[in-house]
Length: 482
Image (cartoon, rainbow, N blue to C red; front, side, top):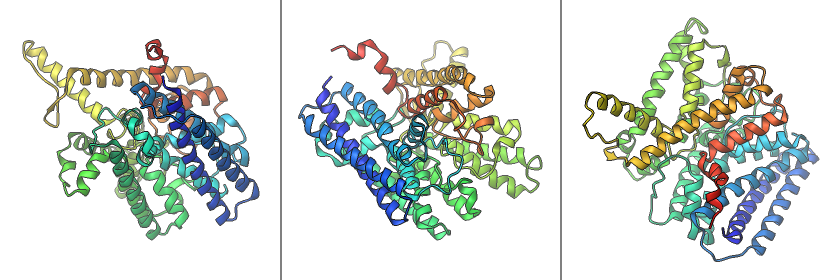
């Protein structure tokens, strides 16, 4: 383990966070926030920049990062980011409980969108902007941003990139990983800019439009309003949000291909086709299920079905209606979609569609082998044969994900009023969704959960965002051996 280059990379990540806090301080000054909020953001920015600069000075090193070092950079970096990111909430008094403040920060950086806040509207604008910025930075990954903009990290950038990006496929889009990171962040930022302009055109203020675009493309879900997107009462805004939630949940490699003129890349990708098919089928089924049972008009059922379903399937978590009052069949479909999540290489959480495709193909192979035991059948995705090692890794992750949901739901149950609240809270936090069912439903929040329960859910959010192995490998004695 090379401690100095690890701390050096983390130091610059901390300074990036300090600059983001300074931007939030500027917003706070612009909107004339109360003095405690301005002081909190200013002090947090100065402290983050000072500690980061001191760490960078004391840990300067030319040593290249190894794979193990990259894992440690990501793990340590995320923990430090979540601790320092909680400072504005605590110092301003918005969330005086340190555990609750860390919960809100982790929820922001992991783009989960679960909140301990019951009322959002009267909060200082600077705090709300910082809340939205945690989504923006966490969506594509703050350390991936550092790889893109800091030359000294590029020698070990691939190790950081592999540890922080989500999904089993992490294609290098260009020969240099720094260029890959720049392209991904460029596309990500472009989507945010386009959505901001469309939302502003739809009647939002510039502030609301920017904050909601950060939350949408990052598939996060933090809103500037207590009633979320419903506060704007606009079908146009909901349609824009649906489109960009879907764009955020699609593999960003496909967006790059489309920008280069290969629009058909979307339709040639089996993961995207699977995702679109499930999205359409689920939306129509839920619309049929809630028509007449909840909404008398078919257009109302379709409208609310597709918004809520898209929000949960993309693991964004925006809410316009209380879907916890829907029939049990619809709620079961929503839970299943929350577990599956978006595509690999996107900002969405969940198991990822590529693993769902792999599981379906493995089931199909086993059925064929049952009748033709001597046949040799390979697993193919997009006409490429998937090696047994990769296939085994995806199936292992799938089983580990489901087993963790069960284990954490049982562990969390003493801190929840019922098992459905516990079960859906684990699915919602581990999948990066935010709202669950019952006590943590769309019109509720996580403020009532006791501190031990919040700590468990923080662990679930980090596990889901870093996709298990990055965190769990630290528990292996072999990891620490030279």
